[in-house]
Image (cartoon, rainbow, N blue to C red):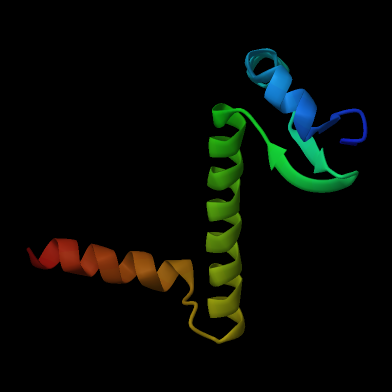
Length: 91
């Protein structure tokens, strides 16, 4: 997704804050805010932010899992299931 159409100066945000918030919520596209012609911030609606954070958390979990596999810490699923069944049977 290209954000080049979603670029506004900070003065626009100051003058049209309520409208900007409505557009963010309805359109669910982030808005790049510039100051002195330079990109300084990105704002987005809360739902999109939460989705982004959840996605990042899942990617971090995947990266940690891959690191454990590369470090040789992974066990075959069959062995894990057998161990869990043995523990359950012992109760």
